[in-house]
Length: 188
Picture 1 (cartoon, rainbow, N blue to C red):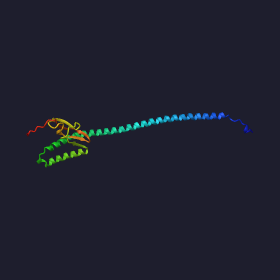
Picture 2 (picture 1 turned 60 degrees about the vertical axis):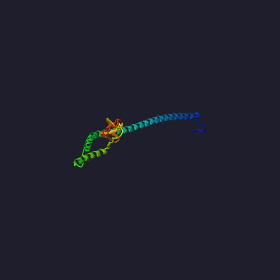
Picture 3 (picture 1 turned 135 degrees about the vertical axis):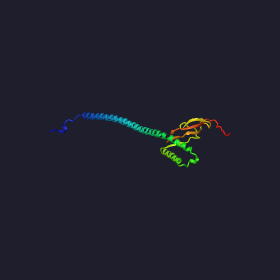
Picture 4 (picture 1 turned 180 degrees about the vertical axis):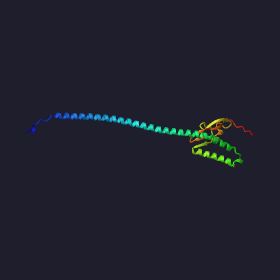
């Protein structure tokens, strides 16, 4: 049997050296974790930015597709309606030449009803004629086909009605514009 009081004790430096090594190991591990954390934070930042760009691109794509859809719808509807407008013009010219004593004729009333039906149908599509007489020439809505005596830049005659589809001009009105010369009065 050995006496415990006489057993040699480990040197004090051995415990400190082990503790120091363990602290160094922990510091090294902490530095590795911090580096990995910084790496992951950078990656998260990059992915977040990429996601934000992708979301913005997606939103822009949706807007562009909606705009293109609207443009296509306007183009198709405009082309179709543009083919119908000359028929409406013809009906209006015909109705404007009916003598007073012929307005009660059933055939004339039938033509007037057809004209009214066309106008109502176009109105449901948001296609409407616009007034030009007496207005100032607006090149976005009017096409001046003649300059005649009358108040300068005022529309004095309309040869063909202008039409809008929503807030866009579908067909410019063909008009005569005053040139600023005084109108001669033949009765004087």
